Image 1 (cartoon, rainbow, N blue to C red):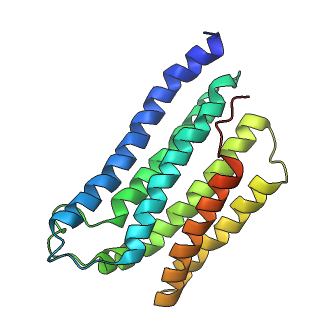
Image 2 (cartoon, rainbow, N blue to C red):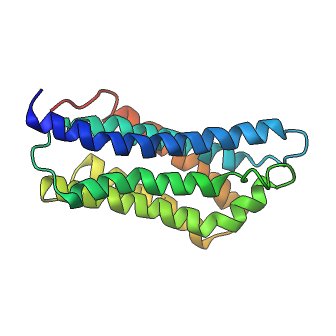
Length: 193
């Protein structure tokens, strides 16, 4: 194993732990909702966002494999790489009712209470991905990846400013469709070089 692989293997442990915490938060939230399914007020955009976050955490873990061959690690690169799943973990914590609220909480009211912070942090995730690319490559190249990320910024900013129910539902569906398209187009295979 090369020195670069050893460095990445060491650094990826903490990143994987945070990704695992985020996934655990989502799964635990879904289980809480299932346990209280008779009294919980289900709000399907919340469940779609939970699936979206689970897929985003999986994508971060999947795409980080390409960093195995990165040959110059700095603390800034590592911190940015760690910040992506950290922000997603925080958003997972904001999305579903916590255990103390699960029995009687309306998923819609939790969503409404946290909407601005949730989507603000989703925008931060996109910004962090641009910053990570810049730190890794020294530039942000125009292309499909950049265009798709710019497009998703719109999908995270609009629901910050619009409380309209139709907008919230449409953005949840559009963002999920975007993520499936993004993964299918750019990350169907692990990048090994």
